[in-house]
Image 1 (cartoon, rainbow, N blue to C red):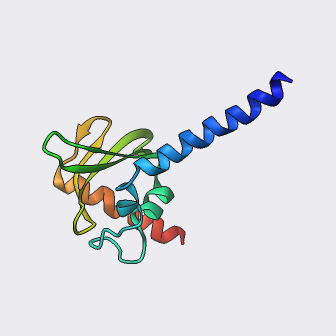
Image 2 (image 1 turned 135 degrees about the vertical axis):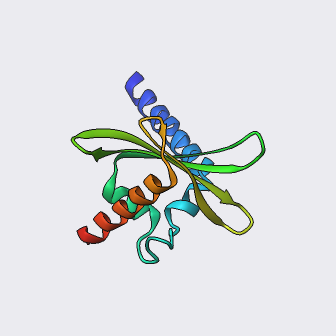
Image 3 (image 1 turned 90 degrees about the vertical axis):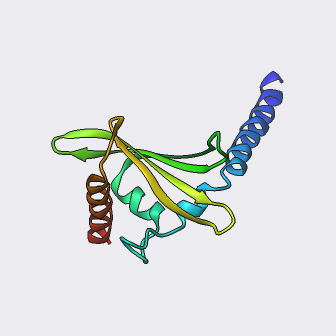
Length: 130
């Protein structure tokens, strides 16, 4: 009898948690479903990143200055190693636009040239896999 009570309660708790996660990600879809037009106007950021990075996780937060940041964390091959990559996008809520503001590889900030090279590689590999 206890099992018949616990299972529905657990299902409700899981559904509430999943709903809370979905509802709190207001800005992630703007980036995931958007385009980095310098690299492609046909492949969304989400599709490009899913095709290139392993273990991708999207989050969002506001800075102390109320800037809206969407952050992507994933893993990719770099040379012979797997590295952690963090890419941050600043979102303009009114315009529903975004721009890349920071990319780190294993907690090291990438230069502008390295950022461009990484994003070009992401989109080239994604385009080649289609």
